[in-house]
Amino acid sequence: FALTNHASVGLFLISRHRGFSDIKQFLKEAKSEISSNDEVFAVYLKALRLSGLDQDALSLYFEKLNNENVWMWKKSLHECFHLLVTSEPSKIVNILADMPGSDSSDFSRGSQALLMSKNYGDVLDVFRLANHRGKLSDELGLLALQATCRLETNEKR
Image (cartoon, rainbow, N blue to C red):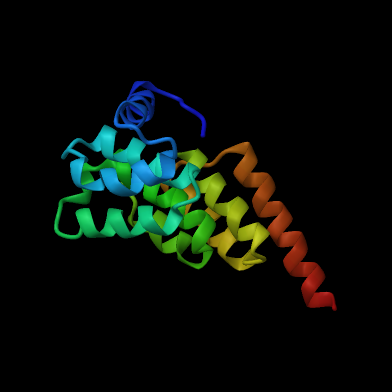
């Protein structure tokens, strides 16, 4: 997987130092060693996602942060959002409505997943939510236009 920052490089190097030739096996076994640091936990979740271990990452996120204040775990929350975008697009609108600090790229990424899963009405809901929060972007506008056209095309059939 792509090594994008110091924490992910650290995870990779630790796995090699401990004799793991398979990063996936290391990631599964290292979960008990993840600290209470948002940046490290977010990178760990990303490493799981990029290794194809989405369900492991989601389970760990909800297990670890079940009783924690998620507002203090913004990076981990955003990583969880990216996991849910690919695995459970039907929950995107609700997640964005509850997600603190979401930016225009979160709304666009969610809309892209909804468009691909043919949830055109939800794309428009995301557009309205982004408009309400002042997070509109050109990309999100184009995605909303595509959804509108596809809704109208489906209604004509």
